[in-house]
Image 1 (cartoon, rainbow, N blue to C red):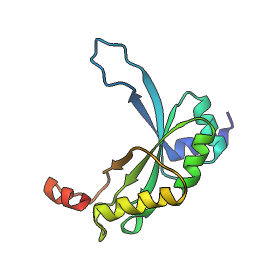
Image 2: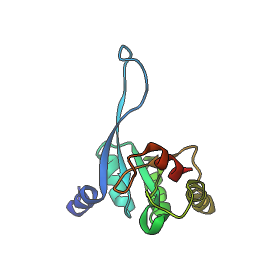
Image 3: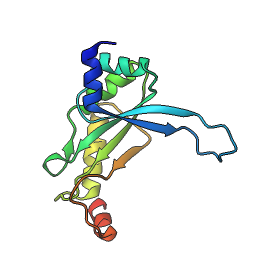
Image 4: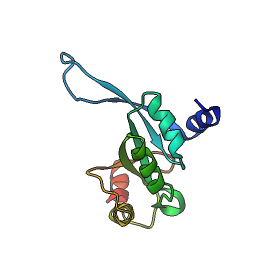
Length: 144
């Protein structure tokens, strides 16, 4: 493993442990490792991730920066991950305070992927960070 890639992985990826089936405890379960990505990751780094036993990359396609906008690293990250046979899921990281409706933010992220010939059956929503209201109703309104 190239050490510079190793440090890039540590600095830009967080590790997820996924249960690949939602079965009762009495049935056999298969565990997989994945990473979530929110910065630019080159193909050789994804290859290192894959060679280390990871099977999926969750890639951010929408950043909370500036009230919410498409993540300019997303398209290259998706292509780079797919090129090394990693599974790919995409997520929107929405800001807690935005002048844009949740529907507008979704449409922007979906359109960005569609414009770049990338399609997915699911787009995940990441709700994290500071600024979210303790009132669940207010947060729900932000996401609508």
